[in-house]
Image (tube, rainbow, N blue to C red; front, side, top):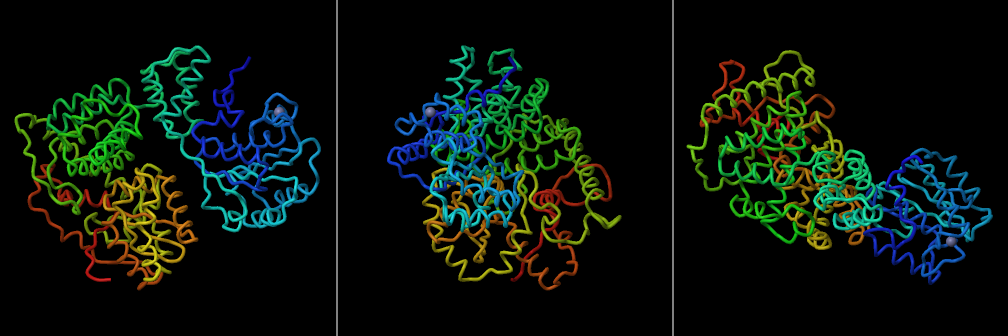
Length: 601
Ligand SMILES: [Zn+2]
């Protein structure tokens, strides 16, 4: 018998088997029992959260002759043929591959005919946001005059892309990301059933890596099983997810915080020698630092959302490191993460990073931060020679990166990097990869084009109310944000710390929650565009300049070269070209091509 993926074998067949969506499944069961069905449903939510499973269970429950308490029997002919996808009256359409008007017109024509075997004809349209405008219009016509025996179930990961006219005609259910605890419970259940041994810690690693998707969790579990010959060990789980053990992270960071460069470097060696991925290590460090900050702010928040993070080492670390230092570390980590993308030798960057974090020279690349009391480095711990060697490496690597960036991206040939004219901030990198959100000017400018004071005031007035409707984690994130510009269709929101901007930009659930909140309060949903607060003056200025030049290339005298930093002791090689102050380099890498002083607007 060929192997079947766990997520297929264990796909829920009853509402009670759908994990982590109790409100939704209870509501649906009640609707079935009391016979209060809607003719159209929208199941929205992240992938792997049970939307299509719930849709098929609903299709079964409303058609099953043996339906009991809103659940299908899963044994009758109707149930079985729906499970197998062979019942003609239950039609599954993947909008991602059938987004044309013709397909939906076809649906509309055929929906008129009564079901042949079942009581209800059910159309399940997956990824419905992919439909073209014409197809949406055709669908809308059907939803406006729904045939009595037809039920539509629309599923989507991106509800904000669905026209409001459609939304207003469906009963909407928002599927949540599944908590790590629920995922854990489900995996335990499956492994117990299959009588497979497992290590609790291994399941926690998998549950966390799945980030709220049951399907992802089970597919990782599948990999771990095949990797470990049907054993689930902690080591295998770490190998498959690429995670680094928490204790190594906290050991490393403790050394860094205590300025123990040598020990921290040996942690890096150990980590790399055990085959861990350098990029993943940096990613894990960023998450770990964020957990430290969250824990310092509100311990129960981390306890609630994280599994296995909190141990004695973690608690000790949170008590000895001050928040400002953690913020600076995150800035450096983000910085290194960006640089690592250009190199074949990421492990060298880890050494550089380690020295930088451990010495923590206070001119961190975040001018917006207030400077906290200086924690004097215990110089005895620092192996000066090694530091020197690595600093030289930093210098030469930074130079390589600059060369690469210049040759790869810039269009003007030659050109000294220092006097490269300032352009629109970060315009070269529109919204990049998911882990490194960039400011997206193509989304900001249209908002600014139509921005009015009144729209901004409207948003500002309801901002507190909007945030109060969010759960505690999202609210903590949004507490450092504020709306800075608004049109009817869009709101630009600035975040005090770049890494929180990163976090918010990649958090779809947060964006959905904000959209839902605005829909509730204002009855319309503008798009959100997030930016780091410190880039706002540049963005505004860049926009104004672009307006003035209306279409012509924006050229400005570089003001970068006037930035001086006398207390730099950048002991690098004697390259003439390399006299750019380090802080400018760091800032350039962080904020994009230009740093502009804004004098007015
Ligand atoms: Zn049945």
